[in-house]
Image 1 (cartoon, one colour):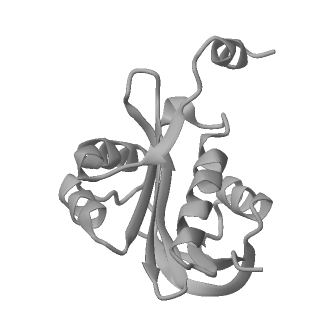
Image 2: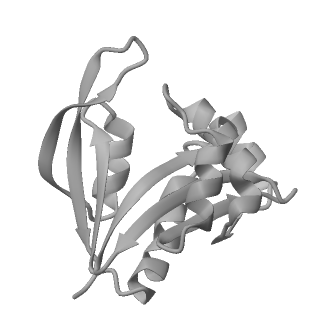
Length: 163
């Protein structure tokens, strides 16, 4: 058993619930730790007040945000805009639980198909999405910029929510 897994045994797991613009700064901080080209607090403020955006957060025992997922719904489709987990909470099931908590909220809005893009080289994220039922439906060449500004392709993945 690792030190981290022993620590988690004694820590209350995060609560998963909808989040709003009051979490913009925390979202931006986690995004900064997660992506080469992060979104700003203002970006999150705009998204979190938009009626078509569904946002859920993982809230720790101290009421701090430790992860988030945001999707934009349009008619019977939605796209995951971002999902990110604070470094100290990664590899503990937070991302998978965020997805699990998010899907019923999208279904309740009438979403039948959920899409996302993921960098082709991001094996952990691809495995997470595949384990949650997403499958590859396309590729977007040079969709992302890596930290060194070189292009990276994205896989387009889809999950069917409606039976």
